[in-house]
Image 1 (cartoon, rainbow, N blue to C red):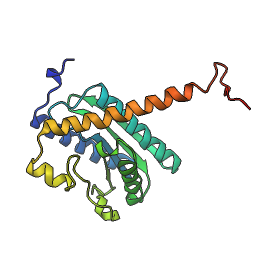
Image 2: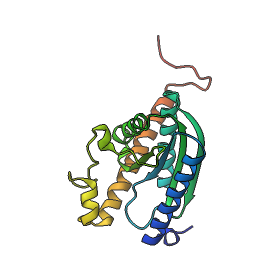
Image 3: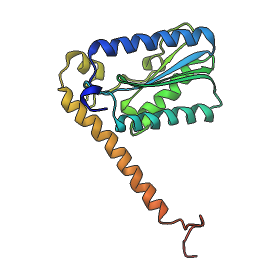
Image 4: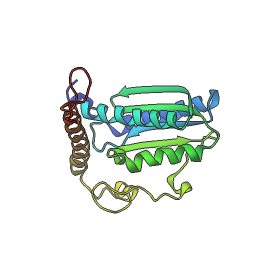
Length: 198
């Protein structure tokens, strides 16, 4: 698939958002206490490439590990990779949607890729749980220190600048991680024992 074929229009993004909301409502009606909706904040008309896929996979694994560590049961999971981007819906058993949102905010705020993560939590009554409900500040712009939603609404930054910043965040993270992995391999022999002098 070439880059041109991955370009999406505004209507396609809106349609994908509506389909996702419909699936969220359906999952809430069938099972689980709340639904986690995970996508990426990718500026510009291209929402899918290998770097974006890798970043999404990293985020999804982080969410699943966080849920498992907190003993939150997953009753349904749906993943989709389409022209408009990667998305996942996870229905969980937990009657405290605020608790789940708090866990997701921790990922958004603490993970090196977290600024690109858009992790929504929808309660059983179909109400999205906001960061402000937990006392967390609104998310900041990638370029300046203003509120992200204000910059998005006014379109004060060129999307190409936002694209470069987004790509830089992803590349820097995976580059640094690979360096760490390569260094760790230097201390492990083929047998799996540490080759450290005692």
